[in-house]
Length: 256
View (cartoon, one colour):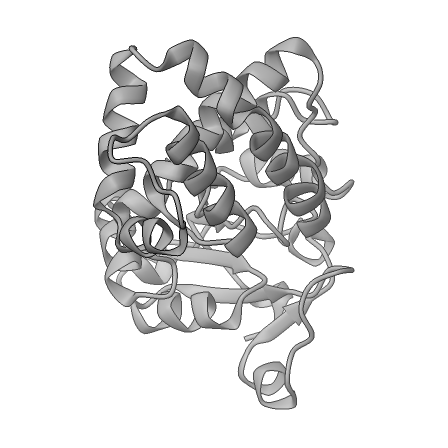
């Protein structure tokens, strides 16, 4: 099926490498969270949200591994220990859900103060508008928390794009290279998986989505990881959203 022939009811978009440059995430957002995590934890340590995040962070396997790496790990869990662990997770680029939740809270302060603006590629706003005008729903599935997703689009360089989006999913529904995650998303959207088009830059995610019955297209934007010849043959690959601006709803043909 070519791009011009595709129909769908829902466009499900990844963020990093798809709507937003990888460099923005790694060179702006991650360093901002890393630099501000200790301050944020000190200011919010006694709050219920932070207490829950700290408890959840202690449950991930990497926490015991991190403590074992320290020659002078404190007996009690404190701000410095958790801050160091979060910085370790960021440096390792590990997709740990409570850490992503914490990052979202830190970024919220940066967006609210104007220090941060969410990067989106120049073709994204036009595609969002075209899909909405055609009657399609637009949903987001990213390893970043739902709160962080809403911040990127709500405070984007193109203005508030959040009104275009009807649903958000993060790793609470499952990891992005697992079929079950896409089964769950289709059920939550109450749509036939075949009517959902997933856009991502990661072949493993595209494979998982396709195994659940979704359509999948891979974005090959500047800075994204190179694709193998087999991957290029296995998936439709596009450079940006422009080839999809004429995406339409399926036509219900009357019964003969």
